[in-house]
Every structure is written in C-alpha cells, then in structure tokens.
Length: 378
Ligand SMILES: NC(=O)c1ccc[n+]([C@@H]2O[C@H](COP(=O)([O-])OP(=O)(O)OC[C@H]3O[C@@H](n4cnc5c(N)ncnc54)[C@H](OP(=O)(O)O)[C@@H]3O)[C@@H](O)[C@H]2O)c1
Image (cartoon, rainbow, N blue to C red):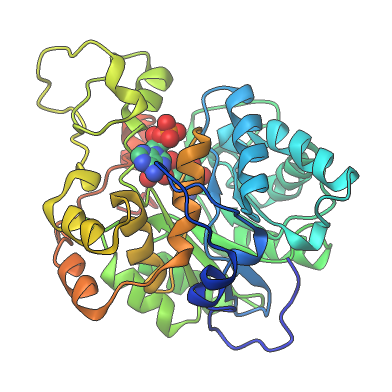
C-alpha cells in the first residue's frame, strides 16, 4: 500500500462519499457493485495507509482460504491479515500471484500483514521467519510485520515447532524487527497482544516505532486503556475477533482434539457439533450478533448486526479484520464501510463494554504452558 504524502492520521475518502457513487440496491443479502474505491484508510505514523477493513485468514482448509481471498479481492478488499501460525500464507500467496500476474492489482494497491510466530520470539529467528512468510506469500515485501505474541517457545529452525517456553527479550526482538524494515522486507512493524507495560518497553527503545497494535477487540471488550494508549502514541489499533469470533470453538476443538460445544448461540460454523455435557471451564462466547442493543441499532439503519459491530469499531478509527469463508458475508462485512452511526448509536453500543476483561481468545486453551511465562500479557 502506497505511502501517503500527507501523513496526518485521519481517514481517507469518507465512507459516505464512496457509498453515494458505488452503491446499487439489491435483494436479500445486499447485492451490489462492490469496488476497491469503496475502501477507507487510516494513515499510519510512518505515512503508509492501512485499509480500514481487512480479511482475517484463520481458515481450517487451504481451499477455503483460497476461495475467500479470491472472493474478497473481487469484492474490493485490499487488506489481508495473515500469520505464519495460521498456515494460510501459501494459499493466500497463490491468489495474490494470480491477481498480480494478471494485472488485476498492483503490489502497491494491497496491504499484507503477517506475524512472527511464538517459536520465533528470539532475535535470530526474525529474519528466517519473515523470509519464509515472504516465500509463502510469493511477495518481495510485507506492508506490516507483527510480533504475534509477547511470549515465546524456543527457536530451533523455521521448520521445527518446539513447545518449550523461553524468556522473551522484547528489546532485542524489536531491534531485529527494525533490521527487517532497513533490509526492505517489510514497510512497517508492529505488535500484537502486548500489554501497556510491554508497549512502554518497546516504545522506549524504538528507533522505528510500532505503528500498529493488533488485539482482541469488540463491542463487549472495548479495550479502553489500550485504545487511549494507542491514541496518545499514534499507534493504530487493529481489532481481531471483531464479531466475537463465533467460529472459535470449532477451531479450538480441531486444534486440541476436544468436542466443540456451541455455547455462543450464534449461527456459525461451530453449530453442527453434538453438544456434550456442560463443562464449567468451557469457553462461553458472547452472542454479540444477537444482543438486543445491536439488533435495535441494526434495525434502525436497516443493516445487519455484523455490520453494526464492525461499523462501531470503524467509527472509533479502529481497523477491523473479520474472517469469513462465505462470499455473501464477506460482502456484507465490506459494506460496513458504507454508512455511519450517530452519536446516540455510539453511546448505546459503548454501554455493551463488559469492563471485566471478557476475553474470548484464550491462548492458554491451546498452550497452557504459557501461563508461567514471565511475559504472558493478560
Ligand atoms: N493477533 C492475534 O493474536 C489474532 C488472534 C485471533 C484472530 N486474529 C485475526 O483476526 C481475524 C478475525 O478474528 P476471528 O476469525 O477470530 O473472529 P471474527 O472475525 O470475529 O469471527 C469470524 C467468524 O464469524 C463468522 N462470520 C463472519 N462474518 C459474519 C457475518 N457477517 N455474519 C455472521 N457470521 C459471520 C465466520 O463464519 P463464516 O466463515 O462461516 O462466515 C467466522 O466463524 C482472524 O481470522 C485473524 O486473521 C488475530
């Protein structure tokens, strides 16, 4: 994604402006002429522009990832969020290459993020992992490279996955990240899942500042402290699980080999598993798309609950990266760029913040050994 000569940190073309020129009414799930020109952007502290909506890419099958990226690019998405850990980079790379080779997009029209995995949390691992991500994605550079988590497993080599935890030296790691910008392998660097203390430590030594913090954020978990911190330090927040991650239980059950209860009540891909007896430790997903206030605001604007959840964050100048394998939902989510919420809607939705750290994505369900790690952030 190109660098903005005017590096002020404001949105680019207004959503309203885009809607008026591009929207055409349809039936059922909004059928319309979607288009890359509908994208809005936030200008990063470095001057580069990040599209406000990106495609999340935690997919369970390569075919799903490929189909979703193809559909998303067709709809107009120009921001793709991936990570070495998601194992979706190769599938994404195939589609990007097709589009680039066919001249349907140019490299500077897309914004691609990837992340340094847990088993790459040592300075010497940064370059090999970033090089592997570039190879998987068939790209010469990334737009953004994030440290995925502030905790780490021992690095052996890019093809080995060792699950012994080791201390993480964030300062040394950040210096290795800065080297990647200097080497031209990524335009920007940032952090994911870091807390304010850890952010402070990195900010204190950074010559190249982190321009993005990616964290779990949704209407139920509004991350007020981190959001304030980011505003004060010109860091753009990117919200993962912006819809409340209704498919998480399925992903978790596949990763851990345990049955997936459907505790969310959502209409999601997790709903077709048999419901086992109640487990007191089971993850309880908030049914954000069924919340009464969300439904009321959706009805008022004639939008879907998912669009309201995304728009709420976009109005707060937060980027969103919803994942979907379904082309109609991909389109529906993209259309969150095309309307505005008013001050009353924002006030009502603001009250949905739980205030008690209602985190959905619990890394300890996948890797319980991180609980003892000195840099476990939550
Ligand atoms: N940095 C990190 O540590 C971190 C952690 C987690 C995730 N992430 C990133 O954030 C992305 C998004 O997070 P997420 O996937 O956990 O949660 P999410 O985007 O909140 O939710 C995705 C789920 O919602 C469903 N969905 C999507 N659009 C919908 C709609 N319009 N109506 C109803 N259901 C809809 C999807 O199902 P269908 O596919 O069936 O539509 C999928 O099951 C990930 O893919 C990944 O790129 C980053």
